[in-house]
Image (cartoon, rainbow, N blue to C red; front, side, top):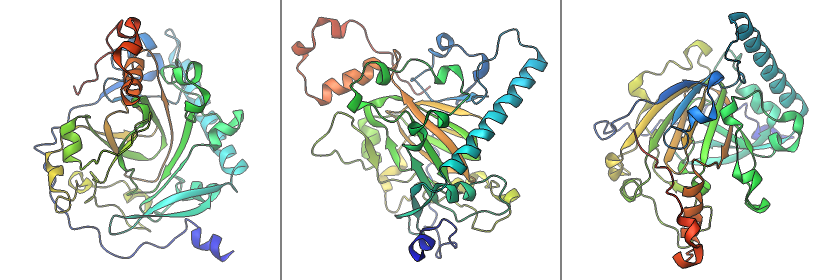
Length: 361
């Protein structure tokens, strides 16, 4: 019981100060505007222009498809139905899986992380948007099994472009298939590592509550140099990448106990940048995109880019990925390259068409 109590997310605020702020070289970080599209009437054919090529925010992404001739009353009714469906999904998840063991990571004042355990039900209470005061900052949990174990817990409704073709499910060997969905929960100040995803697939993240800030760095040798990425001695076919640089190292976040109405009130300058005393080359990193994601929005992005999130408030989201015709060539070429397959072994059909370019704006 004592061990469970110590692992509970209902922890006291960590003592100590944040790292000394170092001004981020925002001249080098020439942020570009992220396109925002209404997902309700967006077809896969229309979305193909941007799909997997650059980050895109999809608004109304948790409402399912809308008929082109839907009336205002029909739109309002479907919106209410979707909100009810998601509320029931969240309630069922919290109740049916409340005893499920959940690992999470706590960010310490010096920027390092430690792993602890709690119950899923407890963590969902911690990030509950109805909570009156901020919980302990810097807590992050990711769970890949619970949403894939029962059909009843499959997330939905979703925008049609998030439920399109996925060669992982239809064509890839079963042992290569990642879990289709991942549950992501965090408190204010939580952040992912700066990383690239396996295989270079197209990733998406649907935010159900709270606010997040995303930063993207286009993959290149120069980016790896400025982000202190060390090439592993051995590379597997998935090729996941991680950088020791934290693009939000000097962010100022609300302390535990701050009233709910102030949890997201972080002035723009306080989202910080990398610690240039520890990582001076990070000043050369070109952050191509920075975008704030709000509840009900999904962000779709080329996951071969370096990306990192900062949770501005407690959040709950669902993440996933896919490989479709817009990114399949890049994924397959990457696998062939990492497997060191000779060109002649691939055959002439392999080079039948060029993969669509990923670009920074």
